[in-house]
Length: 364
View 1 (cartoon, helix red, strand yellow):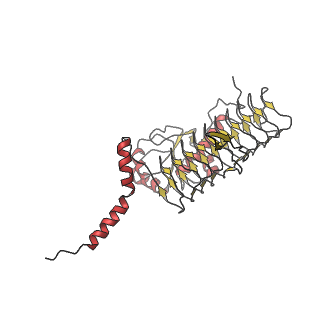
View 2 (cartoon, rainbow, N blue to C red):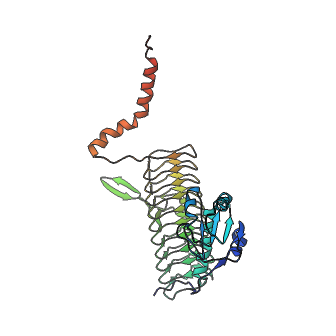
View 3 (cartoon, rainbow, N blue to C red):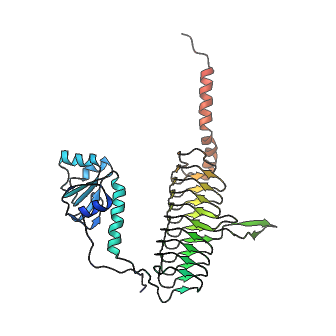
């Protein structure tokens, strides 16, 4: 059995409504002593559970919900009073119930898991003598730590993970099992890196020569800022000459491919199966949906939204836009005929309108 470094607890942890509000804020109405052991969707929540409502269209489920506590905005609480909807023991009025739910859920999960055994080191962990490991770091079974590695306080390295030479990892970062971080990469504080992720593999760089390919050494690094999350089986390649940079607060889903020399701005989110080609620069606070394809050597401005399955082929310089590029599939022969026409539809429309204006009006 793999020792995870977790001290388990059999008792199901519970928080009172009063404890929740004291820690997370909000305004409590109802029974302050009512207990919460979990959070659940409005239509499924039961006794000893908290639930939440974020949209008026969910109000139809209020009457049947069996939850003990409702996280809601003032308008939804007023609706409950007017309509007699729900039999909640307590209400917590807050500005954003969804964010409140996330924080409460994280707190309960932490209590359920129990306090980690900080400083635990499995006997099978292999640590180079030149590595600097903080006393509170956890090293699970079969971890390999290279030369010159620095692990800050409360870093948690999951079973089977490999950390290459001269890697630095900031405080409270957690690596789940089987994470690989290549040499010289820098990982900030409070990162979460899920299983199978590979940080710092060589970028795809080859020079053509006499119908062969000469490998270009990838001498840059990958640097991850603070509060970054990297999904399972996601790959982030090291830079060819400069670094690949993921700024603070970026959230990356599973199975995302980020090529060499890419830079992703702070607090951007990227959903699964997206591929980003080399040397592309993505702005801050962008939202990139699943299965997008972004070509290399372009720039995307801040606050842009790219909808699912979109292929971005050129730079986006205007901040805050929403972009889509989904095209229905067809037989290849038909698609080749239709695609050029569709690209010209707007010009054709404008030209037809101009021609209409130039036509003499009929006299009665």
